[in-house]
Image (cartoon, rainbow over all chains, first blue to last red; front, top):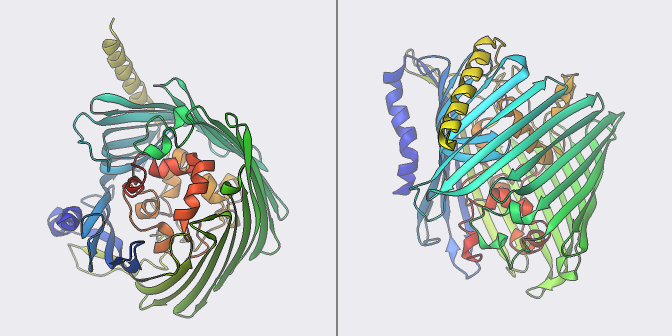
Length: 431
Length: 147
């Protein structure tokens, strides 16, 4: 069964740990979800999901660790998309680090984030700092795909070189080449920039170039100003060239006639946030989309109010999407509140979207969610939530989910002893 | 000299130069974990009065995090394990991120509520925002309609 194929690497690792080393630090988290929902055709689904995140550190040396993440699903009631079970191996890699120069080598299924690359690959990924503020990274292997074609003739490789001065600037250039069935699929080049010329101003962004079609894909830059007392300002500018940006898609939604490949969209926007107190802040935001080919514009704008303390959180947001036609216009409002009582917490979240033009005869979509969580122990937590919705897809949609989260942290091999829970320990990482 | 030989020579020279620079680089690596655990959406500027204050996780950080991840993911890894990224940046996913964390409404999770209806509008106006997650992967369900 596919679930076991995914969980097998983790099981093999667990069984082999006592052989590998005298004391391996094992930590991670198990999340189990049982969801009850109804499909648009009236079919009732009861999928059971298991998400496992596992980290084994100090494998023979404190420089070596293994990281695993994956999920499996089995529907207790019926088949979904032709199968009762499915799953995915999200990552599984051996990590070897050096104590100097932030050097690492990762082998296995890894998520590569290097400039133009933000892709999962099955292969190798290495990175190190060099002298003079330079950093170099390289990766190569097989691209991870969910599409039906075989992986024969597929490959991906690339890298990034950057230079910077901590706190002042970092500028990087990156490259990615991917082949599908031995043919060029992607050849992309990127520039990334982080610049802080003054203490109150930061410029950051990326530009990507399609080396196959020989044209810019995207420029996206942000200017961050502040804080000026309690006020912070952000400005955003971007330009997307559809033909080059969507060139390497595998889905029809990003091809003609769903989109106009000749379209170029320029986005300009900004936001202002004011912190009345450390807990209470308000913000306004505005974004204008200018379509060169269609010759029209769309605007998205609104305001939000947030309140957050250790035991209470609340938020209110009001926005309008003002597209060029009534079909592309809506107002959305959201209000939520969450409160913690000792080991228990409750959450209420309400969404409303008002479509300017009815969809399936409905112009108002509502969603009301209530959730209650309880900390069984510092490591274990259970959450129950129920969502009621009325929208263009469902006259009445009620779905619920039970969640069980368990964090583990132990030493395996050597003197068997369980370490303190990850929660609340200094340096603990967010799962 | 043909292109293949030129490429090999260039790669070898790059590797030698990088090797020399690497041998000379003696800076200490960042620690594996942030020395103090932080809760919720941290304001780095509470402790760090230098440039690290720009990493403050305010509401707008969701739009900015991609640049930090593209340049210095090792900084993210001080506090976040890989599964934190994988919750949204998945190759194949069935559960919406917002469905997994209904008890954490302050987190900026995409596609809350009935996004099936709304995606028809957002997808027309800003398809580039869909593409990084659904253009080449995580689109098996999209293809049920977008054949």
